[in-house]
Length: 179
Image 1 (spheres, rainbow, N blue to C red):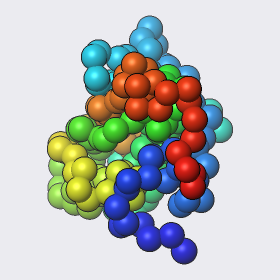
Image 2: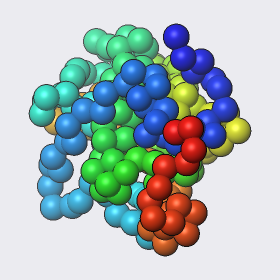
Image 3: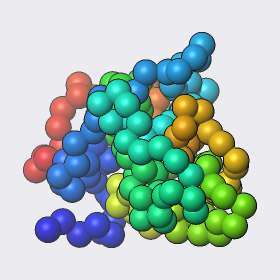
């Protein structure tokens, strides 16, 4: 079993494979926007939903008909979708240097207070990929409702390696010895 907390000198694409993870098909935007937009060394992803096979993996509200564990799983599915969007946009997940910021929005009841525990479903996945030494900023909050009945929306900002940086650090696209 791979060590989930080991240092990530390994690139994220390789780490995904090491952990036996399979990225899902990328979700389709629900409106007139794109899923990813680059600005300099940053990749901004739109709000990503917990979609599997083109439909929500779960619907509802935390504290009403969904448990913390169901929320954690939904957030993890959304985080996997975010990785798939980054892979599709960049062409190579290894261009992602680190997760800069994670925003998690939850559909909750007024009484729900376990927001952080739910958001850890995504944070834990990203720590497995990028390591604790590349920690990320995070905000999580609850709202009355979210689009199409989704219980969670995940938004991420990645720091990315430019194509120029990539070609300079790996001229000719050659694999490093032992890789």
